[in-house]
Image 1 (cartoon, rainbow, N blue to C red):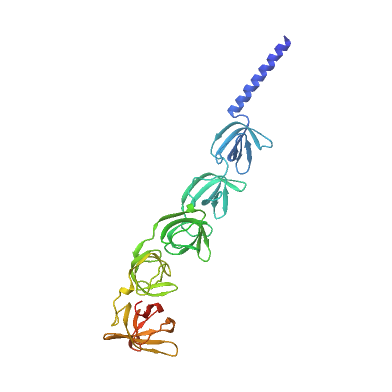
Image 2 (tube, one colour):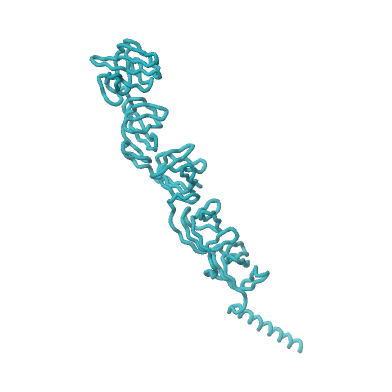
Length: 384
């Protein structure tokens, strides 16, 4: 009987103590409290940090969220036996950052220092962001943030969004943003067609020319075509259209009567008239779509005079060659005649009574009417 009575007393004491402990825990009058940002989470285990202290808790939590935990700290305060846990607002100081969001093989904030983030944000690439959070190790964990716009200022090492027209492609891709040429360093295999209007996100670099390091194909968007204007008034980055006659040819392209820039990307002969759709670049025109709308053979015989590039047909009356290789040929037809200037580089050989066809521009030689020929293919016996 004595043993049974003592056992009852012991059991009663234990029950009272248990209720006292539970009451103290639930009322918050006993135990430890800690508030921090979840900087690591795995099944059954997470780490909270307030920027200066870390505490491990035996729960799976959401990284980046702020939690308040109530329980018992042990193992030098590095671990907690949790009784209660809830999401809350931080009660510790936060650091502030301003920069540009840059998700590329990880998520970063460029300030321009490259700061790795503890987790990624649902924010557009290259957006300006204003963040509050904590550093844990080398990573920054934002607790709160707001988003600004995109930068269009070309600042070395910083993200920028540029829009413009592709001028060159191939070994080097260059775009025109309306005021300057910008070299694009594109991902391997990405090709942009000249004349396309594009929007590009990249990292600005100031090399010999303003340059943009493009990280991904997704950072390049084709938004349309360049503006179309008459070729006589089109500026850099425009597509000029019109009908023009070829005046001369050189290694730099075709010289046209309608522009002071050589035309590249099409083959034609002096005197041919072209229907042109060409991209205007700083020093040249690049043919987008060009075709011959009138062959030079269709020109009338202008031996009696004309302007621009003309066709002259007639019979050689006499030929004179000087010691330096320069020559003259008098060609006549009916009541009209003209001197054809035969520069040595033309490698043209004409004889008396030859029938001649030549294409060139009228000029004067010692006060006499003459024809200036640019290439050997523009003068020949018979038709050419």
